[in-house]
Image 1 (spheres, rainbow, N blue to C red):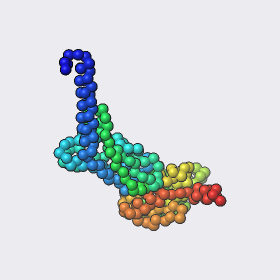
Image 2: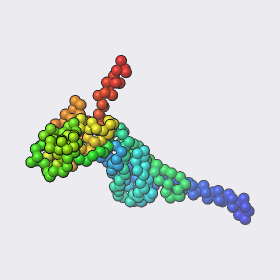
Image 3: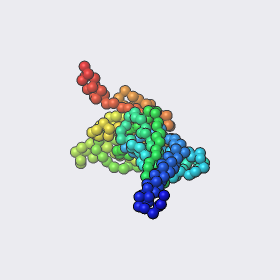
Length: 274
């Protein structure tokens, strides 16, 4: 058959495109399938904050895999290369939008290498329930009433006079300033972190309007106290953690904050069911 006609060139072009597509489909599929994806999810995950998740890309073949994209709902998208015969560790960020019990989102490993004509993918699932803690936000300064060692000798340098709050100790009231300012003021000190003990109570967040904002403030204080190495406790409705520190105590306090249901909301729902 002669190849000098336009029809034969068109047929040759069609066969070429079909061959390219078939080869590309095979290469793209193999580029993804030879890589195994595993996830290491941290124990402490906070809502509305980036939480680092370690991804391990294990490539047991001798061929390198290119342009591997890891993505998922509430996950940052990143592109990696998996060396042949090696395991490659990489990081993505998980930013859940709310506290409480949840599932880790489905993670997709995909690639369009080499021709960007077709996309191959595989899915990694984590079936375990995860507890997401309240976002750490609010004031980083501990309330004056939280320090269990409340004597002036156990505090740092005098800082300022400020308005009395409902959880402040009466011993902190600065009576000489009452006549001048016509309101009660308390003495504020720089508290020492070493050897300090703190008790964080729900009432200490009464100035914050929303329940989620109050939980976020307590979450921040609990986390800061743990990082400082101080002993601390949390009182939340019927829950009392007692004083302590360390990973187990830290998780116990944060989990109660994550699973917290306000008593008034519970009573309202129960009354509605009746």
